[in-house]
Length: 147
Image (tube, rainbow, N blue to C red; front, side, top):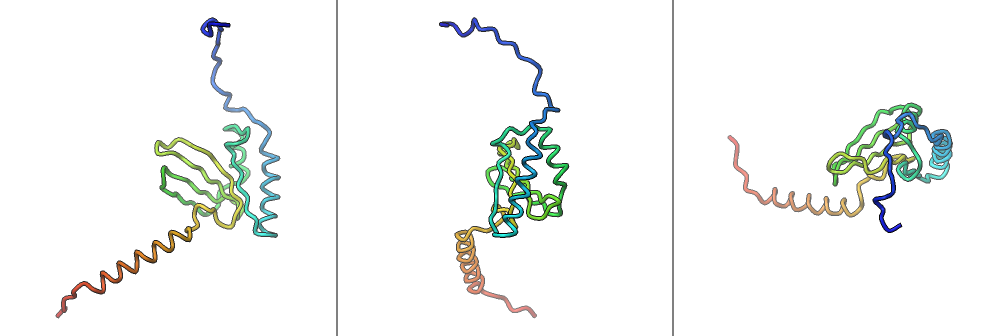
């Protein structure tokens, strides 16, 4: 046991892309319950697909079941974040990528609008202060008469 190199290791082919974990059906039921909760009480739900056994085939199956909605958004902050409405209003796929376009995680967010797209209150205050400064600078600038 004093030499790990003596342990034989054989690498098989990569992960079988057709692997299914059978988590899509329970996930669809969870989405249904979350959507009902959103409708009845306004309670939002985030499901982190990266935190559960979920294969590439599962993701493909899920995307086929959920379809595509009308809204797409990309947020550029520390790498792009892709927001895609599904065919079911209130059910959003949110994919977080790093600066090299590698996926960090994939979330399902059941909400009227994903949190990522809501302007934070602090940002509103900063924006208002900046606009007021810009307007003061503009009104103080000399103007030329146009003839």
